[in-house]
Length: 303
Image (cartoon, rainbow, N blue to C red; front, side, top):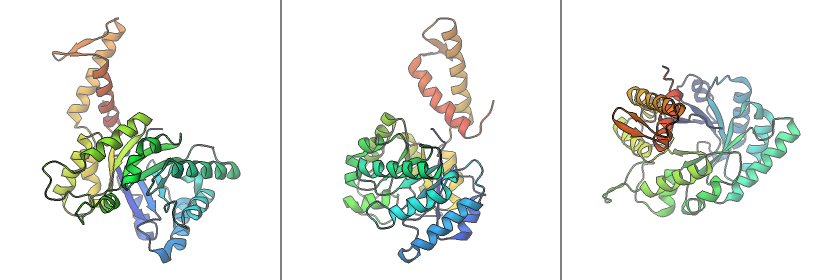
């Protein structure tokens, strides 16, 4: 299933006010966080708060996700079982942080299947989002992306990744001084290739300097240029900028739709290629135009 994930907005599972406000936000995805945003002594109460919110809140067409704790913690199985048993019918996907091996995804898949069978839910409907946050996870990202039919996204975690490999920086999602290019080009490209090979999406993590709109836009544009499908937001004020960056301009979308129409006309006439605005277009152009057209439709553009 391909969902629009231009913006994936983080909401602390322990904060009732933030959860209530999330329904009015223009993010494509809302994820209720039981991991880093929740203090260790609040894990159990946050879990119950998230379940109550899922049962009582209408999120409309927004993709709804819960980030559970990592598979190496004592909270993971409690999060997964309690949340999905109580509110699996209100959930689109489960996000698993700090994924390091395909086994983390496979275990989540098997647990989800058991819960769905026991609860009478549709088997396989709930997706999995896997966060890649260290060197081990990046090395295994191709296998992780293919580890389950439930897989919907690979997500880059810039904070933990920077800490794990020693990038000298303290602002999550920012760039360090001293490197002439961009220090994450390799990471983004590898995650995008792994995701595309598996037929899923690649999502960038957050930019931690809230209020720095120029910095956010710069980082988002870089991720978009390298093929990422969307980016996390951690403050409502970041959503409009990220939506803008990960949506094609209307003129670009209209051109892509017109190119597709020209190609269809040529194909119907028995031609393998066509001429559009002085440019020879073929199947490769069609595929590129289709991605832009789909992104524009997801952004709400209509002819």
